[in-house]
Image 1 (tube, rainbow, N blue to C red):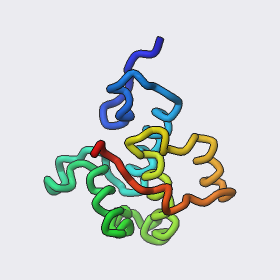
Image 2 (image 1 turned 90 degrees about the horizontal axis):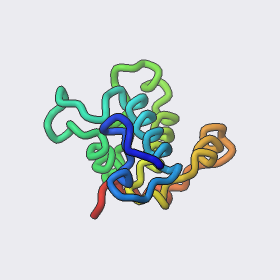
Image 3 (image 1 turned 180 degrees about the vertical axis):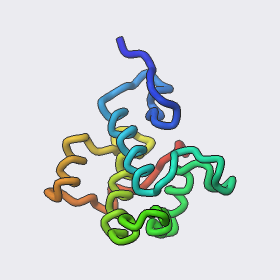
Length: 131
């Protein structure tokens, strides 16, 4: 039997229902990727109120096609490699789909990270929250 365990903010939305799959780990991985490349926590009250939630900011930037705005501005490495970082943010957003059936498997994510596969833009329809 599986019980809900984990850190708030990293738990996939389906933990609130009874449908738990291996995709919950993919969701958590997406959060970690996003935090690494954006240089901030998933929930950060030191940001302006409209930016407290990193997922809301991601959704907004995806709609406006402004993912470059999410790249950590304080890291020389992320700034130098901003186009690669944007690709990693796309991978993260693919992992963060609200509907777990739209998330990739972890083995697919690994293939993308290895350069064997690419994230298709249409895979990132980005429905991060229930509509």
